[in-house]
Length: 581
Image (cartoon, rainbow, N blue to C red; front, side, top):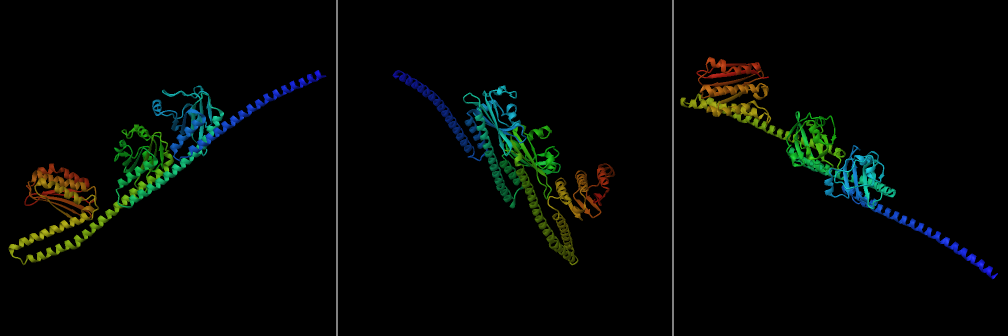
């Protein structure tokens, strides 16, 4: 029994040991599974912490450029990627307009060449904005291959970045650092980062827009302050062009103002190669510029202004290689003066600033240009009115005071003529003649004062012509006017009168040997008479028929006539008669 008892006891101990060993194995397995779960949880927590740190990191700065750099760096760190890039999709939604990279040096970028525009696999993510993971880029059918000097890349992860339901750009990650493929966790983490990045980018863009508008109001106040006082319109236009370029981040800006059928470059701000176009005239019929200047288009945004101008055959010396990108062209609003024109703001190629997005600001600057031109015109009109009022006052004073006093003095001298001795009567007669001549000159001056400055004046043109021939004659011809010379004589008649006087004086210089010449121009409401008299040797019949035929042709063209006669006791009279209109 003792043996049986031992045997039974031994059997029980063996079973217990077997049962205990099995329990330890299972317990070890459970512990290993538990430790694995703990490691996964710790790894998940580490990834979540890294994601939170990345989200906080990319949101610490509201500057859009630095924000984009932070997003690329954070994506590379979260996914363990050696290379990373963020491609910004253009307004057309078909190509990349900006490319921010990490993991490639500036020297390598220069050796590779231009940034990609969204072809191949990069274009696939633009067409279908959904996350993409690949084991090997070269195996995909859309792969274009890499350009020369490009580092080798195999594994790939692409994730779109959305802002308010619109795709802003894409994150591209390649070459996971451990040589493995990007995992589903990598995709989820980078997708979460892209979602947060979309909010951060949207906030940065809103902040940039707010800052831009704040800057615009400051510039608006600056320009308005300038226009409150006396200013040079070209200076104001140059300031508008300069501020438009600065606020929009453009490479060059320019203001072109309409002048008849042409556009004149009145202001340019940018690189020196564009400054040489200041003052240049271009046809207002150009396909792009003309459509905006005429008001047919409100705002035009084109991709390459230099290339467009080259294609239409205009401005062949325009610096096509200057690196211009998107260009906004806005018309100058129609103002009181009706002056047209355009404002051109051109970005540099690859610029992150959207010219089209700031079109409203460009329109505001165009409105400021119109206001500056109108203020300048109003200032000019005010100055002109002051000049005319001053001239009118002087003319009244000359007529009411000076001429009347001279006339009264002449009457007194004429009354004394009968009482004077014979030897004094000649002197009194000459004094009266001098007073009459002075009164005539004053009346001519009054007529000139009543003409607007810079206006076409037949009196002034005739006086200049007399001065021109004074040297050749050796004396100054006497010039007299009668009637409303500048108001009654039509514009098309004036050149013929000047030509008649010029040719008559030329004949006197060449043939007459005269010592005195008188030029008279008499006008009334119906006709004008231009008479040139000299005391020279006279002209013969043959000379009249041949040398002065062109004078008769001019008179006939006006519906008038020319009469050439002797001037007793010797000399010649040439008289042109023509209708005033």
